[in-house]
Length: 395
Image 1: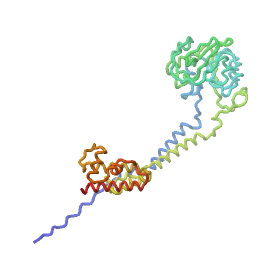
Image 2: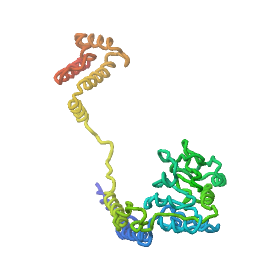
Image 3: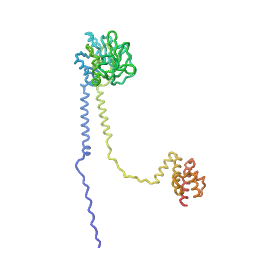
Image 4: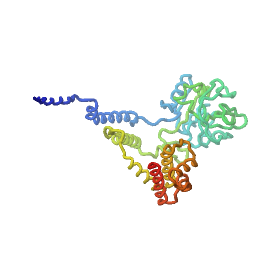
């Protein structure tokens, strides 16, 4: 009596957790997080580039940015040196009329060098300013710029000797007779000082050592103070705060590229950056999980042979196809003929001729001859090689 086994119970249903995962929470709230990040970014940008914050003014004694020289001006005032910031030739001339002063020139874009050259007193010219041939007669600028780095003075100028190494570069100069050159480069000097008609003119190739960013490095502060603290008040000439209302003695107005830009160009640039970031985030998102495929993929040998044959035909590679057919035939026939893998052509041809009774010259031409000239010759070669193999296999 046969007993039928009861059916197997169904497998228990797979349990799935209904609690939210990190991925599901991110998908649900990512737009909210993105909007929050953009809001914070716009707020930070508004604080940094608000209407009350103007651009930096290089070597300006009232500018506290890295490019300004507020720190140097305060150090000079702490030593009892009077520092007067002016932005016109007229103001500089008015101060010069009150007594002997040192004129510091850092920018000549908006000034007339001929009007400025009539101001008496010593001059300190920083940078390769316009009109150097008028403000510093006899000075020639060496072609090319000099990489700014820490340099040794290598001169006898007291201000440079006391300061030691300083961050110098920019331009190198050659001065007239009696010039003392310091911080040399390529035959020129990045700081020169020479007498001229009862006054002293000093020219420096780059004013980075006077900026707030570089003042605390090396002997930069000592060099700047030594050049400016001469016991006389300093007239510090800077570019005008409002260039269109510059000094009227400077001739025709010259506007900078910043004056030609629209007022909202900064906001437009920042909005473009934000839009580009949002577009990159939107288009760069993942398209889904990577699809896996079981390997190895089985491909029939006939498909592989047919594919390679089509490639050879498309490239007209008859010689390569013939070499492949011949090499395969020789590899299969050599062990059947009792020959080793290193057997030469004469041995293979002689063994095949003895086994099959074929003409040795015909066999040699088929296995080691020149490549076929056309597709018909290649087909004929393949047929003959197959004929030889079948004959050897049947014997």
